[in-house]
Image 1 (cartoon, rainbow, N blue to C red):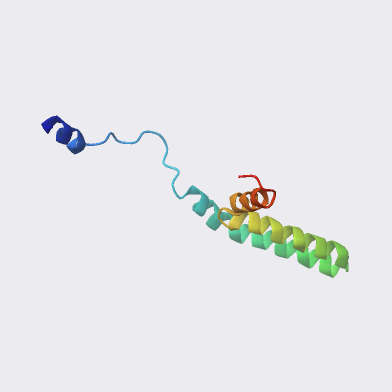
Image 2 (tube, helix red, strand yellow):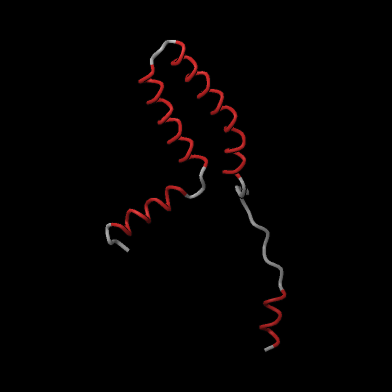
Length: 89
């Protein structure tokens, strides 16, 4: 019984390798302003050239890309919802 308590008190080994915790949040914070700047410049270009159809298509595409990259777990939640709707567990 005493050996069992000694096993619990032993320190755990230090993790080896690269710590990637928080990497996704860092990349989202880093690329968000860049993404918004590119979307703004392209949208203004389409408006100045009076290509309203391409402007609308671009905005819809930009919103879809923004949701996929900046809403956490959206792909997993959507896949589970589709599987549930199809009756797959």
